[in-house]
Image (cartoon, rainbow, N blue to C red; front, side, top):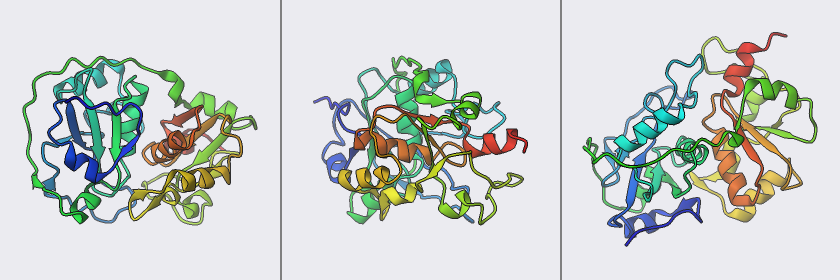
Length: 277
């Protein structure tokens, strides 16, 4: 039986465990090290049949000046096909922190025109907590897929646009960084990057949307977002340090019914590097 995830953004570990044998399911491990972490402890195990989704290399423009720059349409399509992605694949994404970098992959598929994708709520920690089967990490040779990427620029904000929109009060720019970074109380963890905020931006740390690594219920997400954005029709731009955790807020907004959202791909790393005050 084939699975359709186009109407849901998140699935539970129980659901995934029950659908591991679905004929069109593909599971991606999208784990990356946290820039704020002192040490990365790499998990040696993975969810059965999972493949590594390499955000940093295969699915970023490594020639870009700033980290995690989105790849071209052709690069994304080519790399997704290498992982066996077809036009009818049901994709489930997880990471080893609960929900962190998995949201970036959900957003990447969104901007390349594919919505049969969901995030595993709680990720690998929740899967382990529930005692579900694991396997040793391994590479798999997949049959080349037939996935076709269709770039959707309306889901992305760029530096030039941000400079203008930061003075447009009909648009809300929302920063997902921790409040002490947003308020410039601590240095940025990225070496050489100055502290600061985009003018007129608001702060909703992405961690506010999570509880023990899992997304909070829809009504709680709606309450969190409505403290800073009253109208669900307000155009939203999410930003963070380098375009990773902004996608968690974009996910929360999608679940909460906000329709007009974008992610600033370069985020503070780009803005803080290019703006001279």
